[in-house]
Image 1: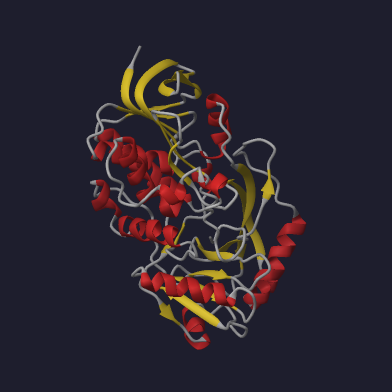
Image 2 (image 1 turned 60 degrees about the vertical axis):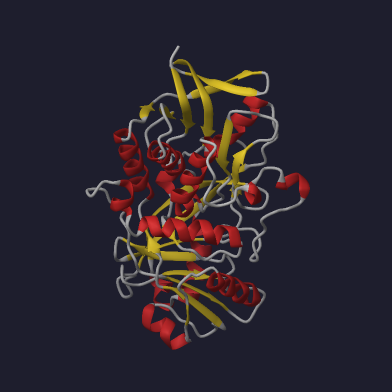
Length: 395
């Protein structure tokens, strides 16, 4: 029977980041298992937005460190031919004089305390950056010049390629069917290709984490939730690559939008989505009523888009925890297992640092960022990482 030092389950952007960092830290014999193809699951559905704006202080630190990786990605992974598809256009966020105003003000102050480059803009300055939008109701506007968006699939495949070069064995088309336990210790995995032994398993199973919960007989709070993304086209007001990503806290759905293809607008809501009875990354229906609802919100901020057409649409599935923040680290009372799940829509932007600290934890190294706030125990002891804006992926 084959034996590895560490087995990583899941070949999305988090799992490939873990594998890359395990190789970087000299983690011995490392195996990455992906049931389908690298980056083919929920990673392929990501909107790709990169920002450090969070109302949860711990997330700011993860995002800030990750941005340093994205902006010099080829150098970081040691592959000058690699690309993360980064567009450095900045991130604009605004609130009206309503219940989101003070949370935004407090969050921006926290970012500044943590060393994030940040500007406060007037309505006129915001309109110069994003001339297709109207800011007549904006009471507070923040701008992160060091932000933008990238391609999650390119990042995952680049991490995997560099991991292979570092000695990691990557097996696609191999699904894990259960963990092999000896008492309260994980000693391997059962797969569709046979049993494989190891010292440590790192699970990055995303929306399939409930499978893991069944294998170990533990409660692991996470719910799969489907969200729709629209691509709108308005030839009279193209959303160019030079225009910033925009978060509209004053819209009913707390819309986020960015340039798509240099002309279209990618837009979605930052609210609670459709809860699924079972984990499934397949494409769901996008009802015309939903398109009309989001379109009306877009037109309220982007007047020319009242006559915009729907160019395309798709769905993505989040792995949502009760406080919309991830679980990172070991599970109490069970040796040989490290988990990273429940990213609730912001896994991609945190993936370089999360992969790094999970690899450090798996190797019993000191982690760059404390994992205690992300412990699964917080759901029982009440130390939740609750964002200031309410339930949604802007936490």
